[in-house]
Structure formats: C-alpha cells, structure tokens
Amino acid sequence: MILDHVDNWRHYATLHPKFEDAFVFLERKDLADLSAGRHAIEGERLYALVIKEDGRGRDGAKLEIHKRYIDIQFTIAGADDIGWKPAAHCADEDQAYEAEKDIAFFRDRPQAWATTPPGTFAIFFPEDAHAPLGGTGTMHKVVVKVALAT
Image (cartoon, rainbow, N blue to C red; front, side, top):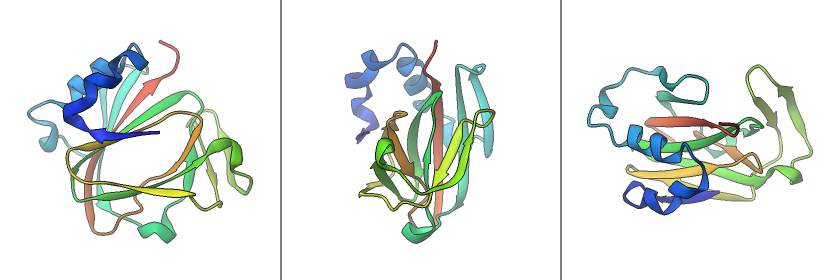
C-alpha cells in the first residue's frame, strides 16, 4: 500500500507502465464534474470508477482483494478511511473470489486504517486487502483500476 498526496505521484510512476496514464487522468481539470460510474481510459487495461456516496463507517467497510487490478483510490471531496491488512493474512472469507468482477470479500478486520482527505491517494496492490468507504459522510472519489498485465 502507498499513501501520498497527488502532487507526489511522479515518485511512483515507474512502478507500473500505466501509472503515469492513471495519474494524468486524475489531474484532469474536469475530474470533479464527471458523473458517477465507469469511465474508459484505455479499455480494460485502465479505467476509472467515479464514486459519489456516503461512507459506511469503519464497522461497515469490508476488506476486499483484487487479483488482476491495482487500485488507485483518489479522494476529491470528503475524507475516506480505508482499512488495510495483508491479503495473505485474511482468513474469514465472506464472498469467494469472482474472476469476472475481480473481487473477493473478507469478514476479517483491518490491521490499520488510513485517512485519505481531498487531494490524496492510496495505491492497493493484489497483496493488499483494503476496506474502502470506511469514512462517514458524503464522499466523492475516483478509483482508477490498473490491470497488472499490460
């Protein structure tokens, strides 16, 4: 997991060939005006999910994992609390992995929490189970999905 301010994204650009394209998308001047839902960037290799909804609170946030995508979770407005735990340490499966949706859920509780105020991002790799939307109140965020295989 990586947590940082968007101004520093260039430090991480070399970690994946599509990270630069992902962060250029997050720097769009009209980012806050995009409608909720899925937005294509580069087909299935790189796309964004715009989320405008209320947080579930830490008790309502579920740990999830992805095997084919890296998540870059960027907060536009509000503040999200995102839980984290090593995926290898998750043992109490709530929903088995669905390859089509690239997601599995766990009842385990996070080992740590990170708050992402506006302008910050968190990167979650397949090794990182994460519990997004753990904050309270209305959140406006973008999750850029970066395929591991380019």
